[in-house]
Length: 198
Image 1 (cartoon, helix red, strand yellow):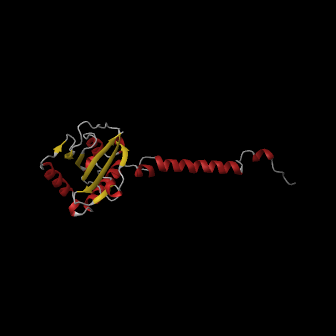
Image 2 (image 1 turned 30 degrees about the horizontal axis):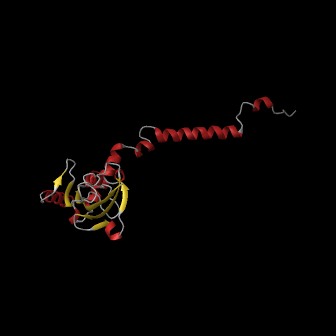
Image 3 (image 1 turned 90 degrees about the vertical axis):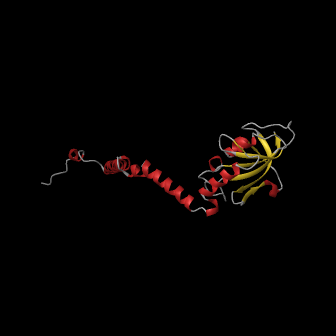
């Protein structure tokens, strides 16, 4: 006599969908352990020592790639020599400036977040010009909290109608980032005429 399958015996085995779910759960657990465990994949990506080394290597490579005329030594020498020139003053931050033309003393003076209109020309220490509103034939208007620190500090020293030359050390300019055609770690020279304080 053929024995019929006992339906009750089948209830002890997980169904196919349940086996898929359990398998997926075990796989996810294994992945989580592999990623987040000490020494795991995530740990290898976020090692502070590795990140610091990578950033330092990148900055060293950028500095090494600069032309001789824009080297760190040339920038330091330029600042030192410029500070000795007649009429040049140096602020506590290291910003250097001299008055090219004094406007009427009654002209308004901006604050750290004031909107101003200026004409300017900017060069690197080798004389390479990277920007000029004068050549564009149109002055620029912006607020002083939206520019590099050397500009924010320097333009506040001016009155409407003044024209100054600023020599801005790299840490008050674009520092290790550089910008556009300006390489990293560059001292910048600006001639700025303050047309209007808004």
